[in-house]
Length: 276
Image 1: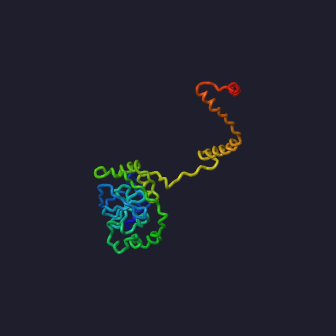
Image 2: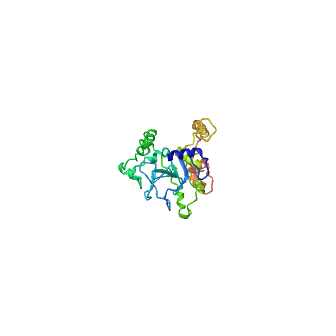
Image 3: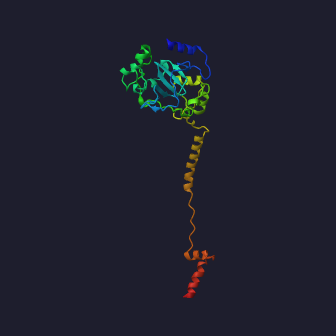
């Protein structure tokens, strides 16, 4: 019933600025859940998953697709800053990669987790109900080789701890100035837009389209230059080589080095006849 009211409220209430709600499953980002982190937490990748967890935080604390996720009191919460404020997330809109994290990476698991395998994800179908299970059939089966890359961590937030932690109305400005990541999940994208957050898609997500053939772009121009050079090469090969000048005899070069001009060969022959 609580989740139903949250979703209905999100559809009916208007959007605000920094604490705007999202119409696809994330509630108002102003919940207080009793977690207070004085500094930016150490986040470690879950092996084989595009999700980080916080091994030194005494709560079920994760980071995925540009947002922090906490499972506390049988509910999921999300935030774009490491210490909130937090927004309630309806079960239908929690990213499946977050739900697939094995039980062993929950630092403060509920008591009912103890009956489940530690190397497998929680049995969310049993907890959320049969309707959720039918709507999310196969959520725990996935191709690990096709998993998305982990999103970069917003490490700029390390500079804001203790009394320097920004107020909610200032958080979007700092986020937009320092974190240029664009989420993949539709739910997170909606949360970003509602809170005034934006980013630039990373290079591995969006590659520039190739230049069309025959256009005036740089690549076709370079190809035309290469073709002109190829056509010019046979003509260059057909040109006769210039005759190399004959090298002067050693005696003539010696005279040239002393500043004198070489004598005609006829004078040399007549001199040799006189000597004989």
